Image 1 (cartoon, rainbow, N blue to C red):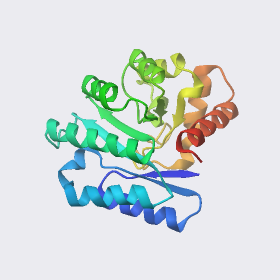
Image 2: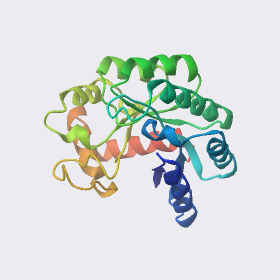
Image 3: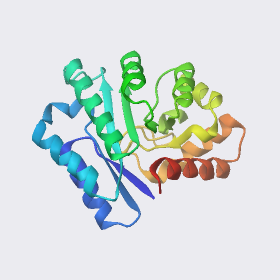
Image 4: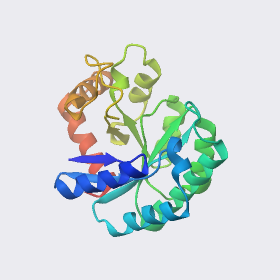
Length: 223
């Protein structure tokens, strides 16, 4: 089962097409902070309608803040982040949150505007303390290939300190392929390497990690 996640307007429409084409694919529609310059009332109305009409759209995402690439003005990023959180609430969908080098602003917006929503903090890159805070708020932590990197000490600590019941596996394809494929195009076929690393960090069996994270994802997306 695949949740194919939109990031641009074009990517959202293509995700929905894929979901129509393959029974095992579901779509998330949302505009990544780097792409919010393409949003206006007309395109947002289409996004809203897609989220309402398409039963295979199971989440709003990925949405959030990105101060690393800094492609869009911070105020514009925040405005569309808040509006897409509101869309998720109205359509009763979970959210997929992108946050890069914007830890404090993301948390502030989540506390003020995301109350009662559920979702995943995608490609998590912050502290274990903040991860625990998100878990307390009812969010899942998205773990992908980075956890297999030798220098990813902070993320390894996060995995050790939060419950397996709060973790979902991710690819972030085509980026962040796990070791031994680091630097190559990522693929869902490499997820076992992520599961094995989490298992090693948790002192658990890889099979148990796979079963629990699948259960978490199905619960999150209502599948």
